[in-house]
Amino acid sequence: MKKKQWYQELFENYADSYERECFTAGTAGECDFIEQEIDFNKGLRILDVGCGTGRHAIELARRRYRVTGIDLSASMLRKAAENASRAGVEVRFQQADARELPFSGAFDVALMLCEGGFPLMETDEMNFEILKQVSKALVADGLFIFTTLNGLFPLYHSVEAFCAAEKGETKTTYRSNSFDLMTFRDHNITEIEDDSGKMLTLECNERYYVPSEITWLLKTLGWKRIEIFGAKLGAFSRDDKLTTEDFEMLVIARSRTF
Image (cartoon, rainbow, N blue to C red; front, side):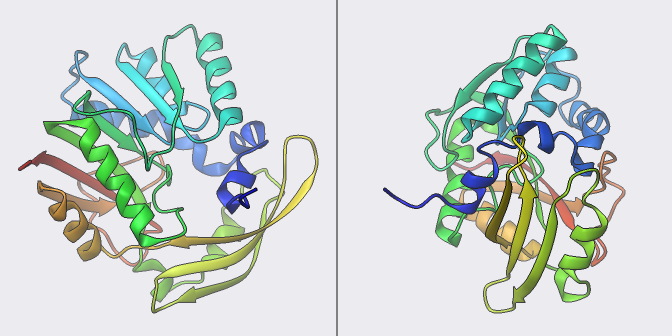
């Protein structure tokens, strides 16, 4: 049997704990920004890639948008369905690998927030395949909004110190971080307590990207207008120029040439 990747192990039984992570607190503000970007058009079909427990998908559904959420984790999707039922909204949740999306030209808008698959993959080729698959899922004049790890941040700051300060209410710890300047990958040992109380020790690595890489990758896929900003938790804004202080970058891509 093929060994599970760290992100598969992490999200096998972590839905409740995930919702206590500090970065989940910004959902409403982030959806405010998304609404502005789509000009409050309720007729648009929205795809939420790596939707997790459904926080953005459900918030947008509350605001009467049509949303489909996909995720690799069955347990996260079960929690998402429970959350949607509790909120009294309808969201189509579907288990799918972002590297093999079963859609073509089916959506007007794609969201991929809080490292929704990209850039967790173990190779650059796999990460690129996610961008390719999401692009394929959209209509030609579609809109793609996503966040990813800012490669400028680790050049000036300790990722380990940042993660330790931002862990929120969970018992998650990060140690032995090493940032590889040749690959722009942060390798670390992450220790978490899952929803059953079991402690897991995971050997993780995530790819950080610099703005020029993201721009080139998207242009390769035919995107014509690519804008990149700093990503502030719960307060996405076009006024936030990306700096070395931003742990994440916010990417907005519009209209493909093919």
